[in-house]
Length: 312
Ligand SMILES: Cc1ncc(C[n+]2csc(CCOP(=O)(O)OP(=O)(O)O)c2C)c(N)n1
Ligand SMILES: [Mg+2]
Image (cartoon, rainbow, N blue to C red):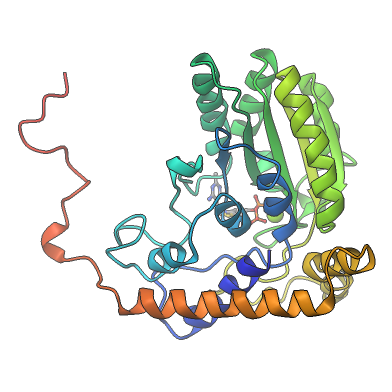
């Protein structure tokens, strides 16, 4: 969570310096969700992160160096500088590359989990999406299909109160989005998405259960988007009182408090860890900055099939 926070803070600065290709969509304040879920996963599990899920990439083992390469459009990065920011994945870490179309990855990960399990794996899926994406047709198709086909996917709904400038009061009229689960014949839970330790313990039980029972589940995590939709957005439409309320529930501050009180770590351990994260971020972004952008002569690589390639 700390590494993701420090990485995003640096990305925000780089964005305002004009050094990022494309936008920056921060998940600051939502780090607990990706952390608690990836820490409860196995190597064979599959993930479809969305724009604010830095902790999913890092939790699955993506390097901060690769993340900076991607945002800085370097030839050495995951997409070779051909695409920017959040449009990357790493199948060897079980992380599917996202597309921006809201809800579109939900049926994809359901199919991917079916494919893995048919080959004998005990893989389960973790699909991340927002309150806005929950209003798409793909959401309905994916949950219904996963339920009738008994596909173990945790549908991780990050309810961060806004979809761009649309507040949740204009998004749905049910009490909780988790209530929709019953319509698909699956279990639904609404949990505090800013309590990393509580969420970790909850997902630990949940992931064991669905791996064993092969059933999907809808997990609505209550959280807050603490910045604009992207760094280009000043989010002046978000009431300051809402931001204040959630800044008192910062997931990192809360996790440290819980762990210090429980005697798991000390304040000094936390400071040392933070220092290491800052150093890692510094080293990674400086190194990525020094690396080359793609050579224009390679423009067609990875776009067209090589000539003479028999696709039949
Ligand atoms: C199908 C579709 N409609 C509209 C958009 C434009 N769009 C991109 S992100 C976004 C808001 C997403 O809100 P939410 O799903 O709550 O996720 P959050 O940004 O809050 O994490 C919109 C409307 C899109 N990418 N895809
Ligand atoms: Mg949202």
